[in-house]
Structures are given as C-alpha cells and as structure tokens.
Image (cartoon, rainbow, N blue to C red; front, side, top):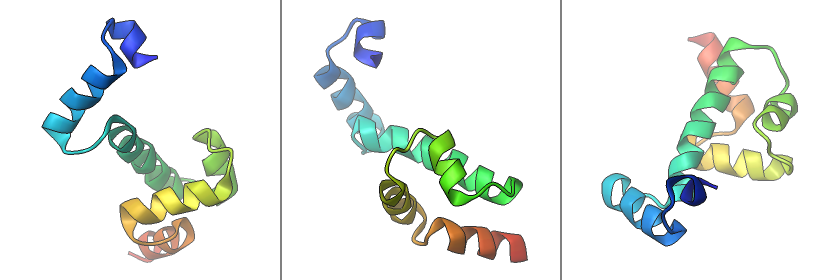
Length: 85
C-alpha cells in the first residue's frame, strides 16, 4: 500500500527504511504498533485481547510474541510493572 501511494517499488522503500533505521519496513512499522500497545496497556483497563484486536492482530499469540520481542516481557507483565511504578 505504501509503495503504491508513494509510487515506488516495495523493495526500494524497504532498502531506504533499512538504511536509516536498521530495520526492515515490517519491523520498523511494528515498533510503532507496539508503542501504541504499551500506551494502551498502561492508560486503559482494556484486556490484552481487546488491545490486540484494536491493533488489528488476528492471532493473539502473534501479538504476545511481537510485544515480548519489543519489550522483553509479556503485555500482562508490562502492565503490572508499569502500574506499580
């Protein structure tokens, strides 16, 4: 979608993002999604499943894996840690 809107090939966009961020386009985009998830976890009482659905994750375990990769803990652990601080 981004490549089409910018009228560039997806490979070219991926190379540019990789050059400046060190991440592939998917991983770069996922960092923003996980920041939003972290915000929702500490600023709402929504369930982890509701937050995952809000962020368009169809598979809950994929959401958990992505969050753990970004923050080194599960969404529930993150919420509990941040709420206590």
